[in-house]
Image (cartoon, rainbow, N blue to C red):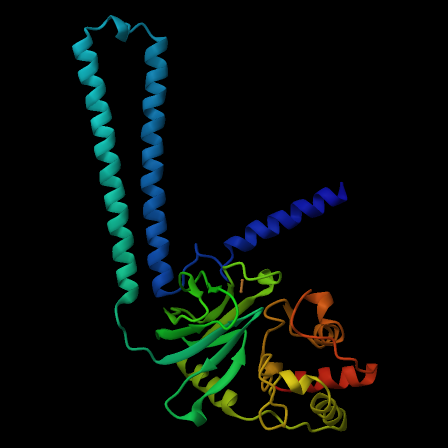
Length: 336
Ligand code: CUA
């Protein structure tokens, strides 16, 4: 009974979360998502109307058949045939008309996405098995920086996303802000997103890309332009130097172990390019690409045994003693 109740509450949570504001195509908060939302309801409305008409005809046929109307077989053949061909002809014409309107509506919606608009920020997003590399581009090299699995954008400004994938096909999808866009190895793809309101929007890889496809989420944080500018300035800075003995120990362990072979922390000699850049890791909301909230406890568990939280992840287990593990975790959490 308890199992049933817990399953029911899980189902309810799943259904309700699908309606929540954070990740739902039915709660659009940006330009292209709204256009898709309107198109969806237009299609749904017309299809509902067609269904109601079909049901009405079916009911009418049932009641006519039950009633005492004359048997159609007894009607003169010419009249009944003319009537049938009229009904079939009207049905075909209506179907063609509806499909043409649908095609035209989709075309107009698609066309509106392609309209060139000035874009304030350009971000290169690289899909990896199974995380998102995020590079903020700029005309000057010293204005560029890298982060992972979390994309900050200014509210009310179109942001250009350029996509790349070095391994398999992924698909970028933040339902409240835009439609999907595939990341295809060897091909350049792009998408413009825009948020009308400040908020945190969850996104998810929408193309099966391997065993941890489901754990390939990302967050888009839409901020007021001034807050975004502050965030950008903060991200451009090197990592906070450790200011206690414990944090210094954590940094030493990080640099001396396999961690530094895969991860970069600017301002230190950790310069690995395989995994996410960790320069401001402590300021991010999640770990392992949205798999768990970014807390000291989760992080310690993740470093101790990544395969337990995310089987087949590319992150290996690094043999650390208990105190070293805690020092490394505390150090990473201090990188705000
Ligand atoms: Cu990446 Cu699914």
